[in-house]
Every structure is written in structure tokens, then in C-alpha cells.
Length: 465
Image 1: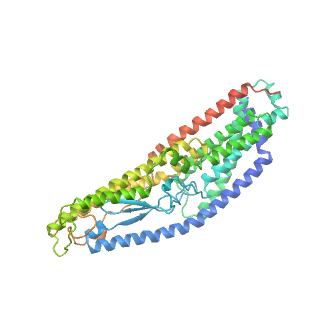
Image 2: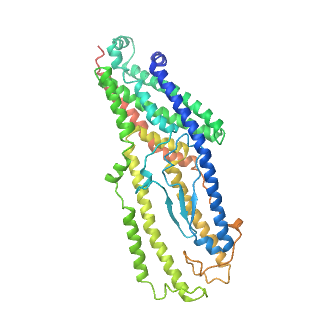
Image 3: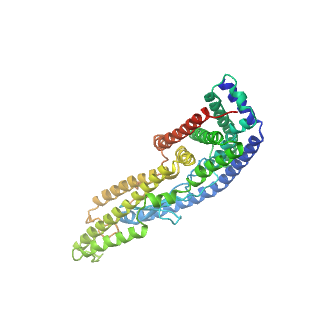
């Protein structure tokens, strides 16, 4: 009987005007997003290629001058635009996309958003995830808001329940048919968008990309299930289809618009952190304190003889200043990360938010990608520092007094650029993506199940007459 109900509801949806309009809209939007992605990505990749070339040439120049110049000079590594960003852009246009480092420290990340915590910014590109989050969620409600109240008005609900079919079977059949209808629309849009990307984009179809597309479709099916359940809930609560439509729109506004866009408000109210101005004041105070208490001669400067004891005092002071500044900044960055992660858990009350986090994990982008690059850069910085110290140890003309800011008291011999360790960004591995997605997957499944269970409880008592 379940299959009969699903077939009946599915055919009803497929032959409806709402299905045809939704299908046309999704195809157009997916196609427009794919064309825009292909055009923008080509320019972004070319710009990154030029930026990366300048980065390598700068590093080569430092190495050819001397090893200490290579170690102490701040450099900026830029993250490469993702070739699969059409699945989920993960807000990367507004997230930090460059990391400033030297052999002595990973100093900071750069962004152009101008906010206290750039991770909380919400700007959207026309990616698959954005289309699904707003349009597909609405379409799922569109197929279910009158599934019960509409049948009651047309007097067909009582007739259906007069047959040997349980209310649980009828309700679950309506949910399954709605999800299948939505996924038929999404699948068509994905196919059109994928073809355009493969034809116009920089890359081809690979096993990894195929897996990411399937992962996106699975996450979208879960999103459609949750909003279809909300639509059924509205249909059961309301006395007629007009009221159920208003309730469904209320659910959509709350869970697709208001909660996902409340990140900044939630972060400031529930998880406040120090401002960047306060952090900078703390840094200045710490550095001033170290300078005042430094041994006499620590700021003396005489580069004619690197073995002068003043250079050792100066190097010791500079390392202490670097460690103090690094400690304060690292604590601030960790506070930003915690603020962002805790805010995500709060906004995960919205199935749209959890879907976006799942899509981000599937595509291996966004915050997940940045945190991996941030961690990998710290590992690379340690490798570069060890490389430099080995060069310095082998130079008998060096006093080996490590100064993180100047090239006075360590080796001044050049180094072959080909021997210098290079940083290479590696995308998050499958295990990392799965670990990031698991929490939100559980939340989304629980939410969909809870909403459907509540709908079923109310439907048991529903008067079908």
C-alpha cells in the first residue's frame, strides 16, 4: 500500500503546474550559476597563478641574497580558488584567503571583510548549495503544505482513510513522494549545471568530483526531507490550505532566512570576544614591558661585527618580543575559531545551516579548508625554521644568535632556492571531511525525524471529515 500511495502522490506532483514551474526555475538558476562560475573561475585562477609566481620569485630573491633574509622576511601565501566551488562556494570569497608567515612564526591571516571575525560574514554566490538552501527548501514546502489540509478541503482525505491504509503509511507516502519530486527537479538542475561546468570550466569529471556531486545530492535529499516534514506539519496544524501556506512560509522564513543570517548577532550576544583594537593594545603593552626590563645594551646596533655581545642581547630581546606577540595573537585567533564553531552549533537549529555545513564538508572548502591550511602552515613554518637553523649551524662565520627580525647575527650565505622547503596546500582528506560533516548530519537527521514524528502524532488525532 505504501508503494501505491507514493506512486499516486508522485504522479500528482509530476503533473502539477508547481512541478513544471519549479523545474524551469531550477534549470535556469543552475545554468546561470554554472556559466557565472566558469567565467569567474578562469579569471581567478589566472590571477592566482600570477600571485603565486610573484610569491616564488620573492622567495627566490631572499634565498639568493642569504639564508637569514629568507628566514626573517614576512611572506604571504595565497590559497588557490577551488575548482569545485560551484558545488559550494562556502563563503570563501569573504573568508581569509592568505596567510602571512616567516620561518619564525605564522603571523596572521588576511581578509578584506573588515569585520572583527571574518568567519561570521554571510555573502552568497550562485552555487549549488545556495540554490538548494533557498529555492529547493521552498519547493519542498510547496509540495507538502496542502498535502493534508488540501485533501480535507477536497473531501478526498476521508476517502483515502476509508481504505485499509494506516495513517502512518499515508503520511510517510506523502513525504516520500514529495522528496522524490524535489530530487527529480534537483537532479535535472545538477545535470544541466554539471554539463555546463565540464564544457566551460577548467577541469573535467574525476572520481573525486563524482563523489562530491553524489554527496551533495544526498545532503540535498536530507534537506528536502526536513522541509517536506515541515510542510506536512503546517498542513496538519492548519484548518485549511490557505492557513497552512502561511505557516509553511513562516517555517521557511525562520529556518531558511532568519536563523542562518543571525550568526553575527548570536556570536556577539552569546560568545563575545575581545576586539582587535584591545588585542593590539595588549600586544603593545607586553612589548613595552619587555623593552623596559631588557638588559642594558639590548637595543644597541653595530652591524660591523656580528660577534659583538650586544647582538646577542638584541637577538634575545627580539625572540622574547616575538614570543609575547605570538602568544597574544594565537590566543585571539583561537578565540575567533571557538566563537565561530560555537555559533555554528546554535545556527544548526536551522536545517538550511546544517545543509550548508554538510555541503561545505562535501566540497572540502570554507572554514574546514582554511583551518587545515592554517594548521599545515604551522607545520611548514617549523620545517622552514629547522632548515634555516641547519644552514646556520653549518656556517662557522655565524655567531648563531637567532634574531627573528634581523639578518645580523646568523648566516649570511646564500642558499639554492631548489633546496628550500616549499609549502603546498593540500585539500582536506576524506576522513577530515567526514568528521566535520558527521555532527551536522546527526543534527539534521534528528531534526527531520522529530518534525515528522510530531506531524504523525498530530495526524493521528486529525479529523479527516
